[in-house]
Length: 364
Ligand SMILES: NC(=O)c1ccc[n+]([C@@H]2O[C@H](COP(=O)([O-])OP(=O)(O)OC[C@H]3O[C@@H](n4cnc5c(N)ncnc54)[C@H](OP(=O)(O)O)[C@@H]3O)[C@@H](O)[C@H]2O)c1
Image (cartoon, rainbow, N blue to C red):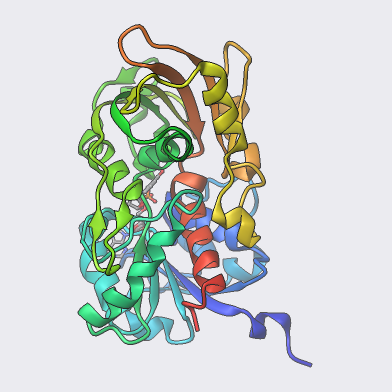
């Protein structure tokens, strides 16, 4: 009798030893659609069993799944992933460009966390609880790049991801957002492993994250925009965004303080805003994919929430928590949001994107 794993789609993880890679391995354990069949990392890990490659570096709070512990780690080359249809990439951006291209041109479906292809006009930048309709650009990408069965889908920077979920709910309910200030307090795990030195972050806040503010000021405009009528390009929103990013002494969970104004006047009431956020539903939930949260957004009225330690696990890390909704004395409204940076903000979004791609028939 055949084992159930033979009926699942075989997947590989690139950058499997890193912070995002480890989260992929945790989230793929016993996945109903996908079977983890191959692992890739750098020369320093290749040739070892996964357990040996992450010795003293495994940072998940659950053990390494037994079948994964024994898997060999290989170099990130397509020939080592021949049994896989899907590739999840948690590669460092310094190598992701060439490596991911080798995979999608070789016919793999690539779901990337790296920044390299995010802004390419034919590459969708998809937050699964926001804009899975952008998968409609894949036929154009395949023909423009002569890819056959291959394609690449990216997910957003971790702080962008948490931000765009409530923005989407507000845009759907009240029309376009004119301008916005966002001030982030980002967790240490967002910098990967080993990341920022303990002597730099203990008892401290670092008001600089390289490249982060630029990403936060442009990625939402692609994600919250639409595809062109021919589904061959992206039409960006014209929201003006001013971002300030800080690294804080928290392990997981990005907190963001947002002030914004709408194009339409008069602006909605605070009650209407809270209702729109709570009522928001998304295609991923309607499709019933395994990683979709029941509630993409949860609104809290406790005056000192959301907080990273208390709210990051909501919806198994796939829900964004919004609180402190109040009038802004300069713009229209302000609020705080909290999202899990390595689940919704990274591996979880890639995984949910692949589940949606499966439902849409793109993994055939
Ligand atoms: N951490 C987050 O919250 C987060 C959120 C969203 C997006 N991202 C993005 O996700 C990606 C991974 O981030 P991370 O935080 O997981 O970083 P990380 O902990 O530093 O892990 C990097 C991974 O890349 C591998 N790697 C490095 N150089 C390589 C090479 N030359 N060839 C093959 N593999 C190589 C490493 O393998 P070895 O262990 O063998 O060196 C490791 O598996 C980055 O592009 C990052 O910007 C991260």
